[in-house]
Length: 81
Image 1 (cartoon, one colour):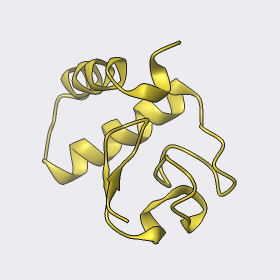
Image 2 (cartoon, rainbow, N blue to C red):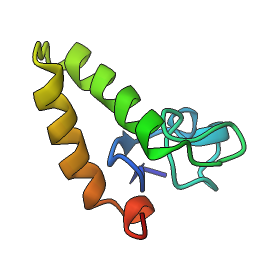
Image 3 (spheres, rainbow, N blue to C red):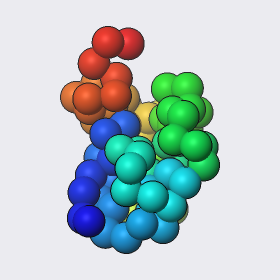
């Protein structure tokens, strides 16, 4: 069951962390809706930036955005975008 979100790279260790609370979806609940439909890149970026700033006590939103953009560039969900 453990895996990684194909959109943001978040570690998913339980069904609850997957979109729709099912391991059938390759995205976490922050990156996709309950049916597994991926949110826009902008929406994903801002949600992940908010999480990183909160979890890591980061104060510089611009640097956090740059970090997240670089991460998203390398994730399978965004390879064609």
